[in-house]
Image (cartoon, rainbow, N blue to C red):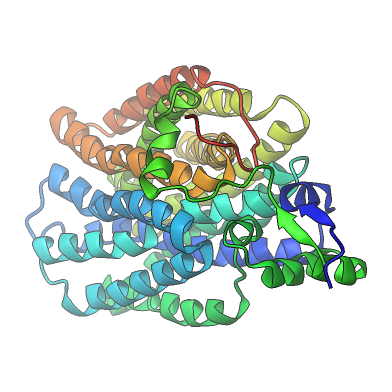
Length: 449
């Protein structure tokens, strides 16, 4: 029996302290993004095995690494919009399933440069949804005061997946070949099946669809003592809009209200991802060229990603407790540029180790805060679309990073060229993030007439 109680779900979530249910969601998203990170990085460990048999130039080798990002870019944009229409849960599950299936097909069928590139693009169509959707999803459940730190501490899944790719590259590929990396990616199919039973829908999305019983069950997991109140309540989320059209959700991120921030976010993501993917794609090969052993060269990839986890934690704390998101992104990108210059100019193994660790700490650390900054710059009805557009278009930079890195290495014939290129891109990221507007944390903001 209705009591007339109206509950704003966004306010209810913002008032909720961190509960075990929140950590469960963070872990689930972390597991999903692990596959994103794993699949993004593992082509870097394929170059060593296929460059000669497939007669690859440095530019072709760079494209081998970045080809999957074409699919990732399309997947980020298209599936982000789909998630705003059909829900976060089915879109996340479909992304894991598609990624797992095409990972298996890559292991079984990729026998040439062309077939490998084609299958990598198709894999990216599925996995491209996971990171932007996961960030938007967690931002909808976590309260504002702990959002950055909890996501950074509890969900370094992308970097863990990248470290896992390094470890498997070192220990499996010498015996089983590079295909072992993609047979392991079949685990995404299993995880998709598990998510059918354990991954809940976004509460604010459920409000938009009028699914009150499901909302009540979710909120009860946060506040069991309010079960009866939730069961009888009517739910809203700060100005629900009825009858919105899909195309309005697509273009709202380019409305005058958000245009400056949207464009600046796209440019920032372009240069940050240019740096990250350029480093991920070439660091193992470059360090082997600098006379590191096979295992040591591959281990540099793990160092890069492992310190990226630490950088994400530090950036989350600094953004939440000290200077805010935008200054943190600028600070970390600037320090990443300095680290790149150091590695480029000084050819000593100790400097290489410390410099690559610093690159991971600062540049990858900045990426996590950039994702959160983007998600909270838009209202809930376009949040996944905004996040997807930023990462989708930003991944054009990710695609170009390994390719341009390969071109630079081939043209200048020195490993310094990679790190100088990364330093320039990191400085441009600082300039771009400075152009964004203030972050807006909004639950549901009506579109302009």
